[in-house]
Length: 333
Length: 100
Length: 193
Image 1 (cartoon, each protein chain N blue to C red):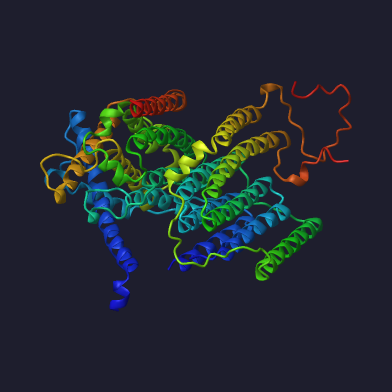
Image 2: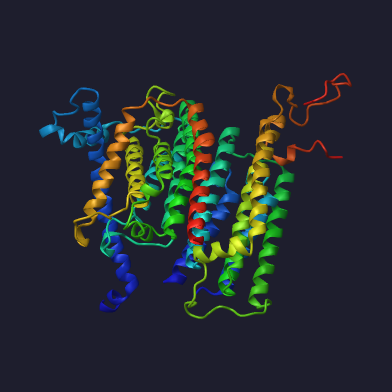
């Protein structure tokens, strides 16, 4: 038994599994309370109070929500492709969760699952795979509205993925490495948001579009196309789509904090507590996501696609050019 | 740690499966997918030799193969869509107006 | 452990490839192909080619297959139904040819027909394949193919848009093969002009 334990591979896998379990549970908790936070903040922005009945200040509202979802009737529409209908919600959650494997929450080795030297590319790969959930969910429901909503939403996601990937190249040029830990360490003397404000803006806008949040949520809005790709989903499958959407928001915010806002860097705290800075910045970004949702009107589909292709893509290319030019010029002199 | 022979055997097997797909299936999209399988089998062989000969050229060529495959898929699918609009079928057996 | 992982990924790859060509529903075939690409990316990771692995997922599994799925859903293809003796004959011929190819490949490997070193050393000490090295090689020695590839992609983009768009209302629809063209005489208006 000791021989098995002394194998460094076994130790790595064991501790990675422990960290994955911790992240999974923390993330599930965060998602439920982010839903609560969204409703409370939305309420206060709309001059009302939001949920305040279930438990003190309404803090047990997520429990009530989940219980409600559990007790709803699960049905599969007639003529739907049963296997894909069941798999699509799972596909919504998996890529978002995998991204958490490379996010560095703090400087210590214990605070991240692993550090691969193509961490940024893994994030881009997972956001590419996130398109499948919506496409398959819309198609497998055997419902015209769901199909149209699914196709629209996936077209939107793949269009904005381009601008998102290109906007991270500015960060890559400045940090000189694809590893997320190296990128955070390169920000010890200045967060990249100060050097790459345009890229940060593009990244946040494309993050809103990638996660199908307002003002880019036309494909799934309640007033459009019935309910878009999740028209036919009920009970826990709908819950999983919802969970996947918020998990996506949290994982993209984590990446934004890592790439632009300096990760765990911040004054006054010792190394072992620096992850508190990370979570503070994460909280600010999550508030930003919620704030934008209840402030801006929804973009029409052609406006949305026009913005992605005609504005954000050329802008991110220009950003790469300018960044590369400045770096080269400074390397000369 | 992984013997080269295993990698080449795997690459060959996937390539043969792609060839069978092209020969056996009549749906143009499935034929296209089998072509993608063949391209990927070739990519695997490139990467295997890149590791074997300790050279990066294999991986760079993989990069180019992927780019060409992407371009080919875009044009091929556009052609299939156009053909579908004209002939209302994607079965290659039924698209034979140039025949004899 | 690595050979075990490799065998697992290889089995997944071969299994999914077989399901791609065997399944009747094109959407299921496409999804199995996505899984095959992801397992191939896993094999690339085992070969210390992490950049290629990630690009494989981003480009093949994340973009090309999404395009395939779009087209399949747009064309609203149902399950393939193929009957007839000639189909069975062609299918049989296809399988026999494939088996022959496989036997030939296996024979060549078994007889070690390809000379050269076989890599059985443990843990190649300088794993090539980090992004930095690829980037340096790509932008210096292979700069010209890189630029030509970007022009190729531009051409492909323009071509795809032009082909898929057709020529507007001038396009006339032909009936499926089998309808007689004899009833249309020379008065038939020219097609998409």
